[in-house]
Image 1 (cartoon, rainbow, N blue to C red):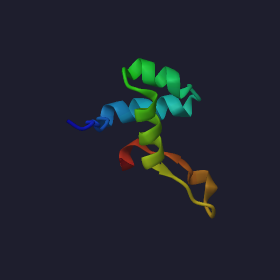
Image 2 (image 1 turned 90 degrees about the vertical axis):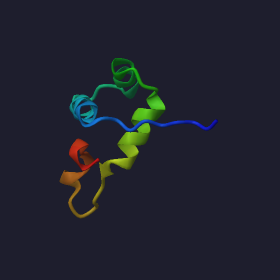
Image 3 (image 1 turned 135 degrees about the vertical axis):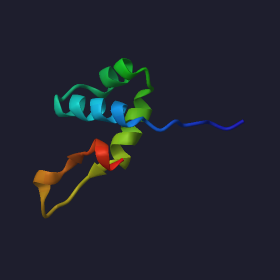
Image 4 (image 1 turned 180 degrees about the horizontal axis):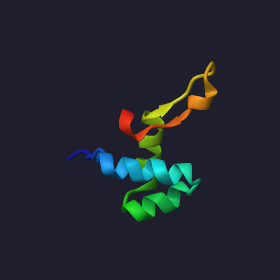
Length: 65
């Protein structure tokens, strides 16, 4: 049987975005959400926007996920 990864729900992603904006450590976010830190890191990596021409737009956007 393989590993099963659940996607984060939109309301959880909104909390994640708010806590990232507040500079909360990923380990604390993971504890609060009851998730493994690797799940949080994976979601941040997959849903992060980076642009060298418009760096002010760089960041995690919960609604894009």
